[in-house]
Length: 506
Image 1 (cartoon, rainbow, N blue to C red):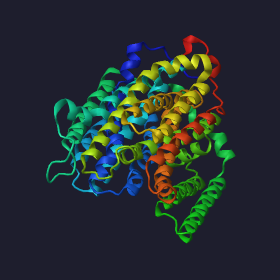
Image 2: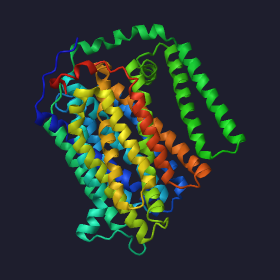
Image 3: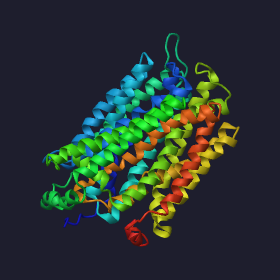
Image 4: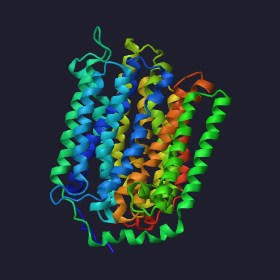
């Protein structure tokens, strides 16, 4: 049985969460400006989604591995998670300096892969950090504090190009012979500095608890899983997935459908291949192999985690639709231009940065209200309410012609974003084993990145096939997905919800 953890003070929770300020600085710059950089370097609108695949693919690969190895890491001085915070921050900072200076589209796409992998190295252990250091009754507050710093960091980062242009006179259009504006370049330079400084603040101000003696018994607890799920089970599942991937690919080919849909076949094939390889290791008795552990724990997820997977899928599908298509949707639908070199386009793109800043600012404020609301109506209904507001906000953008009114849409999106970053993790944290906190948080990330890959694969196809490539419809689709996610949350078995009515449990 785990030793009870002492409650931490407000400032201790503040310090352990402060690094998220820098992490979100990097993510916000990426979310608000990547499509702008890609289009400036010659990317076609229908190819934006596929270029964005770097983010979810690297998350899918990196986060479970970092979670697994950070669970098994311990250094008397640097602890368990903090080495990964520092390494990821250094690599991400270097990527932020390179990205706006990319001379060609392929360089920018490659840098995005490196940047996103680096950010994930830092970010994944931060989720496990809350479970490591806080007792169950403080975890909602811990994740809410992370949401606060995510919001604050993103407010400034998202608005940086606009601020640098309007407050400091740095041009927002490319100089002759250049493709990226100075305002975007300086935003990335400042972002790299903030990323590194904020993460290192957490590294140097927060101490971690050493591993407990009973963590070594985790292997013994896994014995029933070995008996219940034999190698043949995994082999059958793997072969079935591979066969389905091939059948889908054949259908897409014979029907002449968009090539981006093959990415879905690739995802299914990767999972099938993973199950098959795991079965080969298991046949040789290598059940403790890290790769096998990732596959087995995916197969044996707790019930609450499976239920939350559906909630996460549709909410992150909606977010990815927004991140990819808000710039092109707003500039075309409201500003009436697709010319990336025009003043109207760049004014619209700058305003999107402000809108992204606005919803993150709302999220920072909502982070203090989410625990309070959860005490009275429970976490499930809190999440349903928040996601419904976010979905309506996205859908409303289709009906708006005045750019200033888009700020109203972002209020709902901000409330939803704050809830997405805190409530599912609070519901999950008490349903997974303490000794696998990082590991399962990494696997939980599957249900963030898989919907992003799906969105990147099918949104471009849907827009071109049914909506004449008008990006604004991607936001409407995203809004509907977000509302559906909220309804699915009502089906989650939140084991800890009965305690939420106690004000001391927030």
